[in-house]
Amino acid sequence: MSLSSLLFEIAYATGNQNSQQQAPAGATALALLAQFIPLILMFVVLYLLIIVPQRRREKQFREMINSLIVGDEIVTNAGIIGKIVNIKDDILTIEVGADRVKLKIYKWAVKEVLKKAEPKD
Image (cartoon, rainbow, N blue to C red; front, side):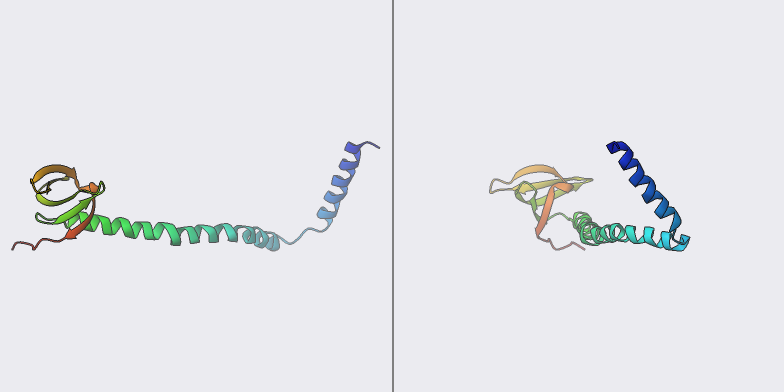
C-alpha cells in the first residue's frame, strides 16, 4: 500500500464520518459567527484606542489653527518662536528675534500657541 492511497483512505473515511454527523444549519451559522467575534472585537478596540483619539487631536488642532489672531505668540513645527503680525488665507507672517525678522509660514506649520493676544473689539 502506497502513501498516497493511505492518505486517500484516511481522507475518505474522515469525509464519511463528517457527512454522517452533520450539524443543524443554525449550529453551523452560530459556529461561523463565533469565529468572527475575535476579529470584530479587534476592530472595535482598534477604533476606540487609535482612531477616536486621533480624530479628537485633529479637531483640537483645526480649532487652534482657526482661532489664531494677530498678536498671538506661537511655536512652529521647526521650533521657531514668533509673534503673528499678519494673517492672509493660509499664510501667517511672524516676527522672530530681537531684530524683528519677518517669516512667512503656513498655518499647518504651527505647533502650539504660547500666548493668546487680547482680541480687539
